[in-house]
Length: 129
Length: 257
Image 1 (spheres, each protein chain N blue to C red):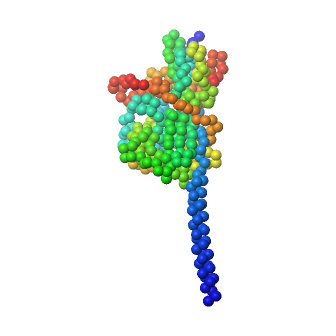
Image 2: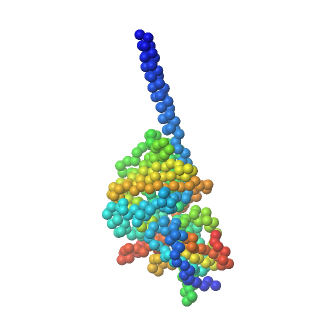
Image 3: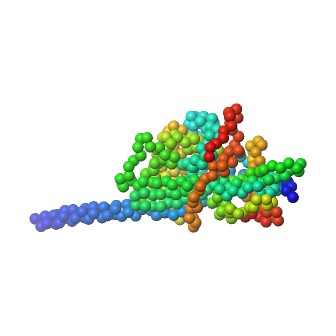
């Protein structure tokens, strides 16, 4: 059920489309330009500042489990709320698919889903929020 | 002989005109002093003008590079992100706070102007000149400095000094450049249509070769500022994993929340 899919789906438009993240985070290159897609179950959803935390438990094809940290760019609670996110947007255990940019730091399982080429959706494909 | 009364009358009229002019100019001066620009409101959607980008290039370390002194660059190169105080919920500082994508509010009171920022619950009080507010003392230093202000025509002019030393006080967020206790900001606020415009000058003779200047605008927001920010240290520290330490040979740091 919680099958991980590490799929590269595109390169290119990130710099232009995710300018808010890039601008806020400077030229540090915290996330890759490429996007990947992950499907997993929600382990934690904390709607706090400075950055809400969404932890996704992902099972890889070899059966190992890893927890991915989902980043919403530089956005805090107020910015996410204006986009429609809320305290109860995610339920622990529900299946979610995210597309975004993986962290560049070695060994860090993080993914930024804030850019326009990124997305979050529920098991039935419904976009979140 | 007949001309003398005319000359006298002309002198009298000129004197009278001067008196009237003096009285009116005094009143006009008082009116212009009282007729301060209306800058009150909640603002959001910061933009750099005329770059038309969300933040000004000078707000990043790379963008500010040509203004940085050698000691600023050396400090920034040596500084480890792990030591950045924001991971302990230290608030965003000036001028980086201007680049954060959150709403803020201006309240114009008789003797002061209050800026309330959604980001990090920052509140700045601008003490208007001429109201007897005490100046900052020689040993008084603050995260957001000590601000005084005055109205000049259509502008609110805010001058801020007495900043503490700040590792990200010139440019910041991940790649930062420091500012010293000699940092001084001059913000000039005015209306640009319905937008709020700020022309900013940042001076720091220790870390800047010359002042940095840029202009930003915000549009009015129909929503109130969302407060409190109520920073969660554990959430703040999650971002630290994205930036590997420069000094892996040092013992790991367990932060106290």
